[in-house]
Length: 139
Image (cartoon, rainbow, N blue to C red):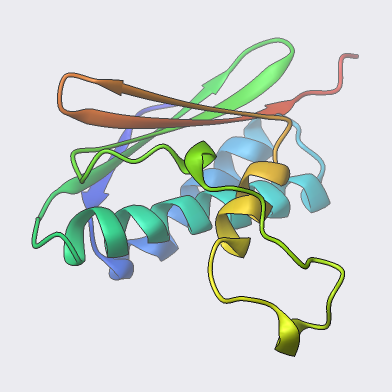
């Protein structure tokens, strides 16, 4: 699919969500798994916008590209925000506790990474690259 490039603002989340759902449909991903992928992408992009751009006083775009291969669908997110590898956040403590007793923070990234079959992060040049992968059913 063609790359979608949007401003790094929260207003872009709707367009990104539509793109992800279209890519998942094109790849034949079951609706429940496609929705989980959309939530994962939404969480990662929200962190890019809020932490990588807004809190750092930066402006930039978010590029999103779907790569459909015989066995997998990859969603590649690229941005020029502050370098950040989501895998560097430790798994949240106290997941067994009631929500009101848990520490704030880190749960969204944890769920985003767990919501896909494989998650990779790369930093090349001045670009963050988050890659979210779902396996496709082989027919």
